[in-house]
Length: 578
Image (cartoon, rainbow, N blue to C red):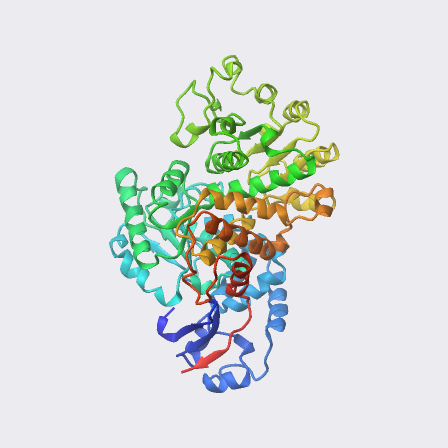
């Protein structure tokens, strides 16, 4: 999209007040930020030379939403619905976001999980229009020059992927950018960050997916993935370019494979304002569900024992967040560590074997836990018994740790176990649904990843909470931007988890609901943003918001006002022709 077609004018809060259009006629309709379709009024049609370019009748935004809903409903399947929404976004971003906002519970399933997984896999075959940036070894040396082309959009959030660890489906090459597009749509829906301030980025370092490499339609860099020093050098060049062009923007790392996810998050935390949603966002959403369960159980977090099945990005990320929160409540590092047990494919993580660097903080010392010596690696009920686990979390993509014997074991440790099956796929949804129903009838407190068929099936009658990252990253991003935070601290995510849980009413807690409903994503993001912003102030990493002329004095009331005013709503903005 040519920068010379438009220019944004902002109010004192940094929100877009109007769009100055240098385009007219067909070029005005081709610009998705300017285009209003049939909603151009008579004056705008005259000023932009659109008198005969559109039918004489007009529709306001509400009527356009109704018309678009009919078109979506006429599509044969979810991937066709996804294609329609993305095409609408490419033509008219305001209408696309107004449509999504009209029924966020429905449309989030199309623009995010689970449909986004299919969109990632089919990216090359259904490619229609380029979105975002694709860096690969052939252009990474020009990264600053390329990024500079987007300065007119005042980029505030970038979601950046290397495409290797996508949504539980692994290395998807160039298609990973579709997941970034979905995340950024939720930044707009939840945080109100205008779509022109958002930038999806693919760091295409190749793919080891043989099916993609053999596919004639594949659009990515057709080579094996870079590794070692070559890979790190590539990432480093992007980071330096991003820092130089957008020093105040937030970079969210997305869908990196396990060891890269942790090493990149930690290596560049002091260079750019960044975090990893798969690690910290997942951990925060899960912690929020656990904090809600503690309110229902009327027990302190510090008295719980946590068993996590799955030691990938999500599982270790959950462990990190629980660990940080336990220390927030006054436990020492050792006391916090000793309450978190993690199982990987080789069994319980302990010092009896060598494990990857990102798992090492959760190794259990055989001297402190001598029962580990005689335990079979597949004896999960035994681990539950010996550890005294009261909270069972699954991220491994299978239901192994939620079989009957595991549930019976954890019931012996607490009258109200907390069960969080957070894997993306359910191999036997009917059985899983029946199990969820039985658990909850027996007093178990549960939340699942979502949305998925089993959760949807139960949610009308069983109030199954969905432990969704969408409650985390939009508000974290908004809080970082509004506070002008110089870095993203671990404390931000503890504050965010409490804020998510605190949005639940006592009536909802009385119904054993652990997480808010997705329809409240905007309200939740506001609460999270304020908590994160005030955490930035308390931890002395805040500075005046660089996107706003509004002078706040770090007072909570003024910060709340700034957060409210900075958010964009999907409504047509005034157009000023030039």
